[in-house]
Length: 241
Image (cartoon, rainbow, N blue to C red; front, side, top):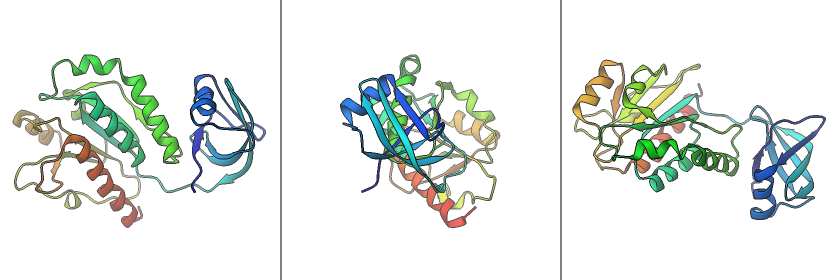
C-alpha cells in the first residue's frame, strides 16, 4: 500500500517537523503515531521518514532515505470559471491529483452573480483542499491557488500552449490541438455552465488561444477538468518531453 506524503517547511540535519493545526490534523484525524513511516517533501525533494514524536501540536520525523524524483507535468495553469462552490472544490481536488501547477478561479459572463465576491473568501479553504489532495496523491509540490481573476486577465497568459474547451460543433479534438516539447508550458480554460459567450470566444481567439473539444457530449465543468487533464497528462508521458 502506498504511503501518504506530507509537506514540511524544511529538512535539516535529517529532521523535519510539522506543527500547529497541521500537526493536530495528522494526530487527531489521520491518527499518525510514533514509529510509523511516511513520505515527506519540502516541495523540492522527497524522503522516506519515520515519526519520532506525535503530539497534538508537534509531529517530528527523522529521515530514512531520499526518494527518486517522479515525472511531473509541465507548468500547467487551469483557468476554471466560477461555478457552485461545492462543485468548484471537487474540481480543485481532482485537478490537484492530476498534476496541475496553478488554478485560477475565473469570473466569466455566465458565472452566477455573487460568486466572485464569495470566492475571495474561500481561497484559503481551496488551498487547504489542494494541500490535502497533493499529500494524498504524493505530489512533490502543491499547486498554487490564485486569487479570483476577471475574464480580461486570462488574455495575457504567457503559456506556450493556451486552449479553451469549447463544445461548439466543428471544434478540433484536444489531442489535435498541440503537442508538447521540452520547456513547454500550458494553460487550459474551462467555462461555466452554458460555456463561453461569442464575445469571449472572439477575445480569446484574438489573444492567440486555441479552441478544443472533448467530444460530442456536453460535460459539466468539473467533469471537463478531469477529462482534459487526463488527456494532457497522457500526451506528456507519450511525448516524453
